[in-house]
Image (cartoon, rainbow, N blue to C red; front, side, top):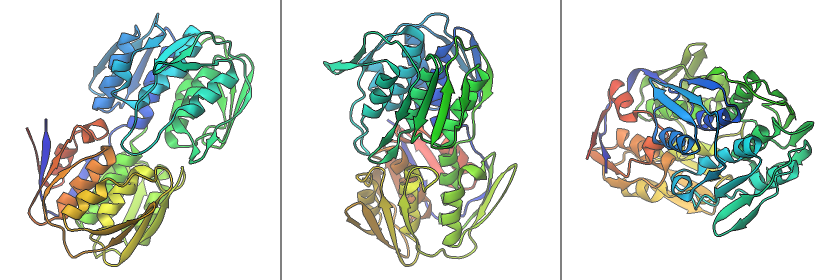
Length: 418
């Protein structure tokens, strides 16, 4: 098992290429199963989650190649059963459910297991699909949809923590082949949902309203193969923003889209970051110490939960007292104990982390608990005195393409070792 060894103290400078969005590529790859024709998807990041997704597609009967950031798929015939030994590796595999139902009219799907960041049920997925005509029942850890007769309907997808991104994706993909008009109210409006809808429209779907809380889908008889380029990864971009700020560096994020990061950029500017952007990317620098901040994670366009851990790392060395409240996954604070090992002063009050900025952190062996927590610990290691060893980096490999190489290119002292 690999670990990342980080020697703190380097000020990051230079240019880093932002990869394609993992959270966009995964449902788009699933959507290629909606057609028997060939699809070509470009700007796909080389991540373990992407390779798991491709493995599932092949098990379902698709022919898939992945080379130099391009995935080519052909799914002339597919089967309707996704086994647990594949689903257990990645919760995002649930987004196969909509395409399989639309294509096969039936589905057997092992329910994804638990998640370290908190409860992530699939009830809204199943509710939305049932209202389209794909009623399910669960038994022995499996979801069974014996027969689907998809008919468009108005569906409300709001949940206790807001909209569901993959639930919106699943219902939207299934609705492309339903008879008549489907309306999704309280739909997720993340850029990744918009990217999937744009891909489906290229395939011949009739979708309007994506990017808003109300999406309308007019069902069509068939979808065809297309080529598509995945949008840049806004969470990777946000993470590299923090890498520049925590080291008081100056970094250009090539390919990053500032329109996907309006809230993140606003909050970072409010604490003293210098940020400019154009069509080519985003420039981030910090020429002075930042100030403390209060923020709350919310569904898009609010501050993303996937940036909460990284901001905790940044605020741990920012003068003053910061309060970071997690409204999406209230238990998503396992990284705080590891930051304390490095000298952070932090208390957890309910779903709010109270961080007292310290003069410095100290390098220590730490354990990654999930994808974004891993990134936060690497960021903390960049500023810590001494050496930080981040264990269980298979988490970080799920969502960051060659993060150690990219950080080295900016001047960080970071090495991947067995």
